[in-house]
Image (tube, rainbow over the protein chains, first blue to last red):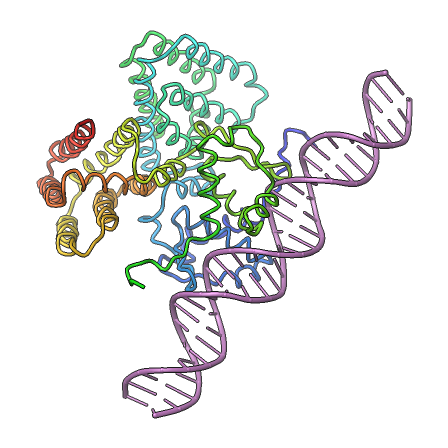
Length: 235
Length: 235
DNA sequence: AAGATTGAACTGGTCGGACCAGATAATGCA
DNA sequence: TGCATTATCTGGTCCGACCAGTTCAATCTT
C-alpha cells in the first residue's frame, strides 16, 4: 500500500454521524421530529449503543439535534441553533461545493478576521516573521508537484493562518481554525480557478507588503483578492 | 429543593473534561506531551474507560489534544490548533472573566458579523420583522424581574441573534451561535456595567433605526455601543 | 556485528449487556 | 370521571471483553 494513504479506516461513529447529518439536512427528518431511540438506531445499523450515543453528542454539538435526557432526541431548528461545525459538515457533504451567497458571507468573515490580523502584523512584524513566511512559501513551491489538491489547499490555509499566529491575536487564530473545513473548500476552488503560480506570487506579494509595514496595501491585497474570486464565480 | 435549581447533576464526563482542560491550560501537560492511556486515567479517577474516551473526543473537538489511534493521546499545540470551542471552555473556566485584549478581539468580530447582518436587515426588513423585535424587547421588559443574570444575558443574546436570523444571512446566524458562551459572558458584564434599563432602551433604538432603514445609523449604534463598553472596561 | 524479522505488549475503537434515574404513558382504583 | 400507581421507555453511565493497528525490544538471519 502506498505509504501516503492514510490507514485511518473510517470509524463507525463517523459513518453514523454522516448518515444522520445527511438524513436530517435532506429533510427526511424535520425540525421538531423525535428521532428513534439510541437503542433502535444502534440495532438498525448493527452498531453499539455507545457509538450512537457518542455520535448524537457530536450532532448536538453542531446544533443539528437537541438531546432531552430521559425523554428523547429531537431534530433541532438547525438554521437557528446550528453553529459553524454544522457549516463544516454541510461543506463536506456537498463535496466542497457551496452556493454563491454562502461563499460570499464566509469570505466577508474571513476578510474581517484575517484583515484584522494583517493590520496587526504589519505593525509588530519582526525579521523572523518575514523569514518564516518566505520559507513557508518556498516550501510550498518546492514540493507542489508531490502534493494533491487537498494537501495543497491545506498548505495555503496554514500559510494564512500563520498571519494570525504571528500577529499575536490568538483569538483570531482560533477563529481561523474554526473555519478550517470551509477554508479548505475555498482554497481548492481558488487554486482551480487561478492556478498555483498566481496563488504563490500572491503569497510573496503579501509578504512584501507586511515587510514594508504597508498596512493599507496588505489589507487591500486581501480585499481585492477576495473580490476577484467572487466576481470570477459569477461567470 | 428549590424548583429553580436545575436537576442536572454534573456528569463524570463533564468533570473529567474540566479537570483535563484545567491541567492542560495550567501547563501541567505541555504541547507534544503524551498523556496517560485512557485505561490509566479511568482507573486513576475511578470512572469508566468509555467516559474517558468520550471526554477525550470532546477535548479533541476543541483542539486541546490530538488523538492518534492505537498510539496515544497527545497535548496539541492548542494556540495553533484550537478553535472557538476552546475559547468557550476558557471563558467558563475563568468564571466569565476575560482579559481586555481578548474581549476587544471578540467584540471586533461581533461588530463585523452583526454589522453585516444589521445592514442587510435594514434593506430587507418587513413589518413583521419590526413587530417581532419589539415583541421580544417587551417580553424581556415584562419578565425581567423573574429572570436571573444568566437568563437575562441569554435573552439579549437571542435578541441580537434574531438580527442575523431575520437578515436571511444564515451563515451569520451560525457564527453568532458559535460565539454563544462567549457572548453570554459579555452580556452579563454589559448588564452589570450599564444596567438593564439602558440596555433595553438600546434595543428600542436599534429597532427604530432598522424600521427607518437607517443603515449607517444602525451600524454606528452598534459600533459606538461596543466602543463605549471597551472604554468603560479600561477604567 | 549489522540489519531485517518477529512477536509481545500497549494503544485507541467498538461492542453488548447491565444498571440507574428521570420522564412518560398506560393502568387501576376510588 | 379524576387521581394515584405502575409499567415502560428514555438517555447517561459503567464494565469487561475483544479487535486491530502501533511500537519497540528481543530474536533471528546474513
